Amino acid sequence: MSDNFAQTVKQQADIVRIIGDYLKLRKSGAQNYTGLCPFHKEKTGSFSVNAVHGYFYCFGCHEKGDVFTFVMKLENISFPEAIRVVATKCGIPLPKREFSSPEEAREAGIRRQLVDIHEAATQYFEAALKAPEAARAREYLTGRGVTAETIAKFRIGFAPDDFNHMRNALKPHFSEEVMQASGLFKSKEQADGSQGQLYAGFRKRVMFPIANEQGKTIAFTARALDAQDEKGRDIAKYVNSPETALYSKGQVLFNLDKAKAEIRSLGFALLVEGQMDCISVYMAGIKGVLATSGTAFTEMQIRLLSRFTKRVIVNFDPDTAGTAATEKSIALLTEEDFEVKVVTLEGGLDPDRYIREHGIQQYMAALRSAKRHSDYLIDRAREQFPGRTSDAKVKALNFLLPHIRRMPNRIQRDEFAADAAQKLFIDSAILRQELKQAAAQRVESVRSHAHDPASETERVLLRALVLPEGDPARTLAAEQLTQHPEWYESLPSAALLESLANAPVPSNPLDAAPDEPSRILLARTLQDTEDSDSAPANAQSMTERVENTLETLKYRQLERHQRELRSLIAEADRRGDHEMLANLTAEKIQIDRRLKE
Image 1 (cartoon, rainbow, N blue to C red):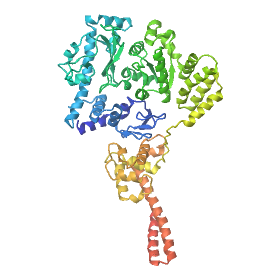
Image 2: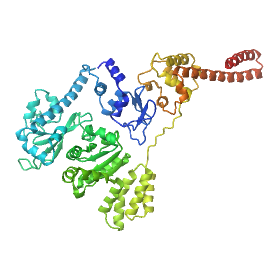
Image 3: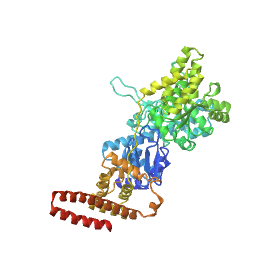
Image 4: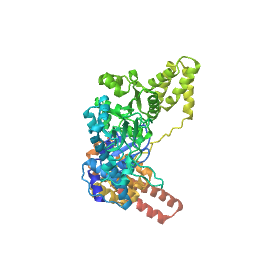
């Protein structure tokens, strides 16, 4: 992909809109937006996006770059792939792709074909669901209340009870290497060590496509129609695609592609355990619902979710596995400073069955009455360790303490502890002492954002020097600073000013910074917050502001020179060096005149 095309895409891309598709941004100035950094853990937003200059910068972990860098880092893709993603989001037609090496072309080709083969498999399963052989699969779906509209929306399909048919259907279109890498097929090792013929990995199962954030199928969850095989052996009810170059189970949230806009709009996400729960809730009208595919949250999934919201309602199944998953998810989410509530449905029902038996209105009422996670955990402690014996209290305390300690917010932590002490009849002094000891042992990474801000003089010059080549303000600043480095050599930003004045501005201005402190200073300057640019200053043109600033620098340098001359004159007089004294005095008179002009 040519540099010219990349530059075209970059110029047309709205970096705020592109990054805003991945995480929640809020406007913090005329041209700056901030949010929680997706590249490191943080509780207060230090991630900045500059709309005018088209770059992002994190004051916490110091990640930086342009729109392509962001997409590359977040989606873990190559630069050419990032260009394609951004171009597609902007509706820019893609040119024929070029590669720097045969190996790069091969890898990109395989990855692209993996997306294609999953789309082909989705269409194959959809068609198979309509065949006579799929009667039991259709009966199963009808019994679960799944409508034709739902089947079409989620592209639900059926894998026939056949080892070879799907392979033969796809073989004319995909190489054996791609078919093997897709995880859709298996093969057995032969006696001589070679691999046998490929055969379908999913058979006699209802197929639920798993999509990535862009809505493209990357894997499947398959639900068995029988409990046992023909030999009487137990069959796993649900199986997922294996890990592939496209799919990693712990990095995907089912239905995120359809739910993300609603989650961002409403400000919270509903988290359920399985795909059928998720589908039922979604089709009943609650769109901001996600499923973990039967597993407790992973750190990657939490990082993914935090781009859209920090508020979650958890509604896992009430069985033993679901309860354990709820507690693990609460632990991980609260540690990341999420606001977590928990729903436990009456009758021990899962969301899918509850909606079918009681209706969506009662389910929504249950969501509205969701418990704070602290209340849910206290109730769990009382259920598991009933009574007021010292043994029950110790066990209840040991169950709750890890959850209390994980809470980053001290006020919420103290409130949780006080509530637990009251409801479990535990001496609050004992509980406070336990927490105090834990706090003393806890090592928290505290990041300092306390950097000296740039002066107004520096801000004007830095903002001028990152303007496009040919801009009058930039030309004036660069020429004068290049000719008179003594004007700014005493400023904290001297190295940065020199770098920007003596070279063309890079596409990302932060790349011109010679070191990390300079980069932070420039990023803060270009944030352009409303309170940094006063109305009177805005009334002037940028060129006028640069002219005034340069005059100020020139005047300050003359004053410094004047002070130096006074000191030298005093020293020459003390030593009786009359020739030096006369020369210095003449020079000082000239400086005095220039200062009075």
